[in-house]
Length: 164
Image (cartoon, rainbow, N blue to C red; front, side, top):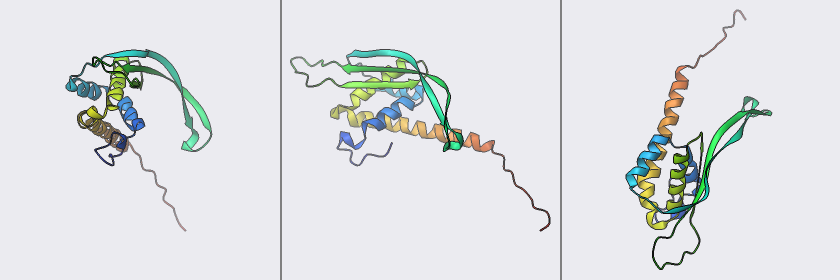
């Protein structure tokens, strides 16, 4: 996720970027930052959390022929925030989406709630600072940790040429 062009605009961060981040962030970090917000928004389910399978595909050598690697379990859900202000007409429902690898209904519900709340300009900056930026750092730290662990197992092969 790239840094926003301007902090004044909700649209400086594309929705696809924050959905991606929410859905791949470490579960512990996501839940910790959600609980720190101390929000309990009212919502209705569009699609309750459900579990399914997706086919994972790969390419030989990263660029060659495609092949089916196997299946992975995913959880997904969709919800809409309920208007709780008395007398206020609801323009269009704010819909939040959540999806993650594995079977974790609470995680995808939390991601969907954050997605919906991020679409509110009044809450965007607070959630950006208190949730998205720390999650982005957690994802980066995890990536660097895995890269370091992989580099530690790297074996360098070389060939010596005899004679001329």
